[in-house]
Image (tube, rainbow, N blue to C red; front, top):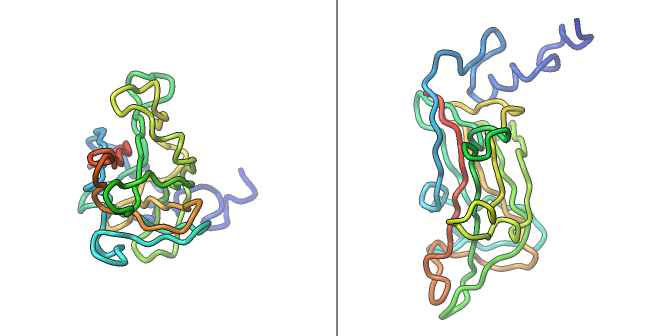
Length: 198
């Protein structure tokens, strides 16, 4: 038996999963549930409540800020990623490109992107992964140019009312826009794979 086994919240992630709405330690919170893969896109992530002015989010240089937020629906649980690394044809792949508010033609925003899961109250937050944005802008139709994201089973599932977040730390102060314009139109793609249990 682990020396931490009798200390609540230390012996495993079961209690942590409970704090994130995913159930307790007694049994697997995903046991007996239907499971399917899904890709959350730009429209799923963009939250008008995060905007600093209409359709834009102002960012400070070198500071992580939430730029996307997805609230887990009733009777479901989520994890970032889907599939398994052992089966590359079956795992998820990410594409992320945010653009600034430059007039006429939006310009791509460089920095570091974090995938974060947290509880509804914001008292528990876990960083699942962190990437440079340059890594995530390959061809959206060629998985060889995208970053693989298999299901992140080392983290607990997050349940109803808990939140998946995208946090960006830009290299320079700027504002990102909801919809890129000009030559960047249609290139502002935020595709993040997730696993859904219901």
